[in-house]
Image 1 (cartoon, rainbow, N blue to C red):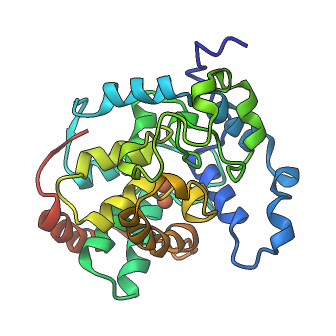
Image 2 (image 1 turned 135 degrees about the vertical axis):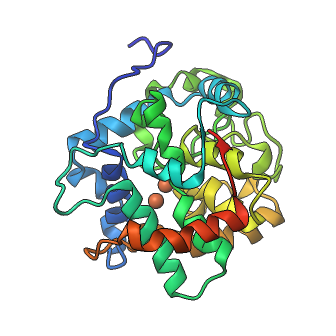
Length: 287
Ligand SMILES: [Fe+2]
Ligand SMILES: [Fe+2]
């Protein structure tokens, strides 16, 4: 396998939602502890292949290259609502009767947060948290847009799902990256740690000067299941990260479990959310 040329067009998932659904099933509220390690047996082949690609090609070099390509640069200028509509042009191949569109997932997450009486900035976070998935529309393969995220440049925690697929990652041949701390220092703080590239990190950089810090942690680390669900990598975190991860954990159930068959009506909800967007993120943003 030539890992210096990652497959740009290999998209084994039926759609980005298939990854979200897989995570949801892994962390089902009624899951028994012994079922967790068993996930790999009943994983659809497309999801397995997705993780194989993700774990093989998310190298430190790849992450640094994508950061250079996307952070502080602009492909499109769009308001938040325009970005939601743009994201919605991403069509999943999965069953249209049971699967939600991207805009519906974002609205359901936001509506569930709103129904529980959380602050307005957190409702907005629910609305926008997956907007980074527009990376797919910029030509990024699924494995560089979604997936459980993890630090690069240090040893991979065995708590990362499908850990075995890291064996073909070129970083496994770089001794400096294979120690517990790798290129980092003990408790260096996650802001100084490069995470695998995807929709979380991308969106964080777009909104980072305009939302309260807990919102930024929710956006930046909501796919970091190895940390917020499995407790890995504590030695890279500082006390401030630990405090902020309480918010990430508070957010996660809304992302995972707010799916319902009640489809939110974007036309009816739009005025409320336009107000909310204008409060924190008015006008066009650079995407
Ligand atoms: Fe997400
Ligand atoms: Fe989500």
